[in-house]
Length: 144
Image 1 (cartoon, rainbow, N blue to C red):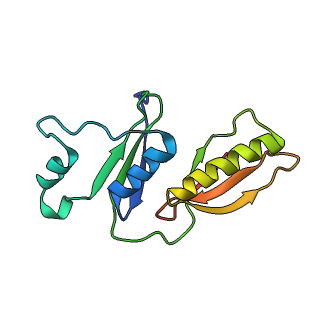
Image 2: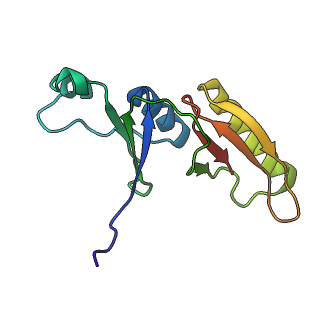
Image 3: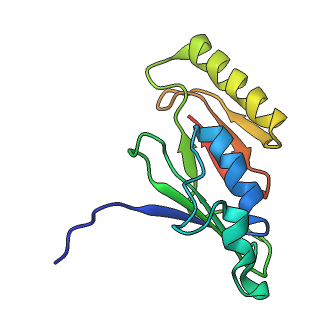
């Protein structure tokens, strides 16, 4: 059996480049270099058949540690809750009011980028607080 070398997280979406650039801002990711022979991703995109132009985009962790994120245009819109979501881990090691302040500050930053603050899941006896958010296309994710 082959061993897994890395994973990629793929988003179905309406506007791949716009959503990729949003997630670059959220995670500190970058747009990778265009394929060899192309000065820019725009040049590469214009070389594709018209039906494929604007249909995909990606972003990567500049440190090479996190997974590549790939965004592909699909014809249908989002209609139900995600079965998989990202946890953006900004409060690691923090508890109580200190954790909540960090989560709220990051939520405000992301709302300014177009995200939606859905709800706060307050700490209880088993879990620390987290904030449920939606990205610019309505995909749920958590600030944890």
